[in-house]
Image (cartoon, rainbow, N blue to C red):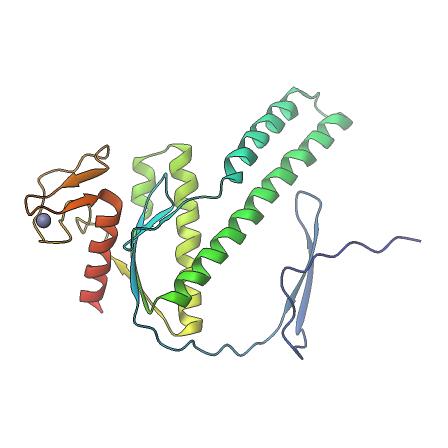
Length: 235
Ligand SMILES: [Zn+2]
């Protein structure tokens, strides 16, 4: 007789919910998923005064207009090193061998763990942002940005940013909040968020700068403040 499988619930089923569809699937890491579709009534949250702007980055996934930096969790770098090691091991195994199949499983499991943890992290961040803020202004990054810079770090942060945006948008819709995308040509980095003066240039290596008006800026926080102002002006 087969032993029952260990089950991990990703979240509790809502009280009294009857699943209308149940889907069973298996990922490349060999894990089984049972997905239940239920209808749930979500009530909007009470309105709040606070608003926030988000500037997308690489070292920090996002910088908020409040100055807070949302950095990728520390375990991600460790997991990526493990993944690289497992991939090297896989490449060294003879094709068609049992060891190769095992090594492939290890790679798939690490991939799956990275994806799970990242999703989990993004869910926590977006839920908090939506709870705390009535309006969230974000940069409207498009595919064009990604093609300009093909580094791995850039690709990873762009993927995370897309996921973050998507989650923000549907959660905002659930809870009665607003997400505003600000035009990507808007010069958010070059504008002083205090006096509105436009700087001539703002090379990427400049992380902090001082405006002629006397204001000193963290590059990303200043950009986030400008994104918020532009977003609020649009709405
Ligand atoms: Zn200024």
